[in-house]
Length: 403
Image 1: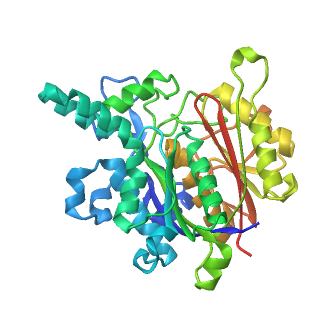
Image 2 (image 1 turned 90 degrees about the vertical axis):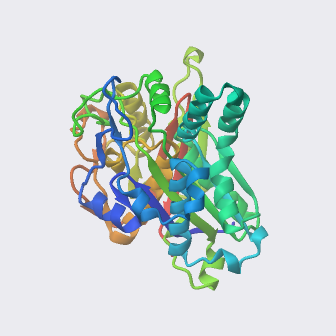
């Protein structure tokens, strides 16, 4: 089976813009979580988020794009530009049909939709166009990247909440294996606007703490919900053979993938994350003992944390593998979270460390070996990344260091 390599990374995260800044901040346990400044959160029960500062100054996007796009699209375009440059790829040197784009989306179109609704309030005749525009948004990120770089190969958008970021990378791997030379994949999400905030509050999973260091505490006895964030990562994926032939550096390979869907509560059957992990391990021809680190989903709610801890200990045994949740420094980025974790895992392989989980005092009964407060030196050759989406989505991905 064709090995699929990651040759470029483009990162936009609340604690670092660009891969180098993000990685330095992660190793330094620097958090990007704070009080929302993109709108006045005073009236809302949750007021903290992971926001990206200084993006407008760093993005260097053409001015003509600004009135046509919203923040999530601009973040996606900038991350794609950075990933292509990191991979040493000039799209102009490729046949347009040899390049595709597969991304994921959770709710990044809220700001776009809010802007359209504001037009609606001003002009009632725009009622239809406002809602058509919001429904159409899910294809925008993929389409804008494709248009910007002349990519006319296979493209698409995956929508499976936070699990979607891994699902998009898995689809990209399939397309490379089918013969498309290069796929731009991953996800960036951004829904920090009043409409998006109300929708997230309705889910009942947001932390209401005003203390940035105590708001998002996965696997902690005081876990009380998550803090949302904006950002994510875009990855360049191509066959390992093609990457070697053009002399490209490979961060590592997407070695295995598994996905399941939890049964409804009334079905009397338990969660299926452990099954997704085993499918991913089998797909990678790996045993549990081969995994050097687990990048956990880290929901930050006691019942969901317990379910994830049970899945990890079921597959690996109690405290048998280091576990980390770097997103404690960014907040949960929805579809952008898992691609960022994949990027983080690949960077950890190169650096020989496992990045930390910050602020958490873990419950010992969960049986996890959490990497806390500072990076842990380790040889990381193979890592497992987990992601779960609201409603029962589970995805697991095995990434392996380049030979």
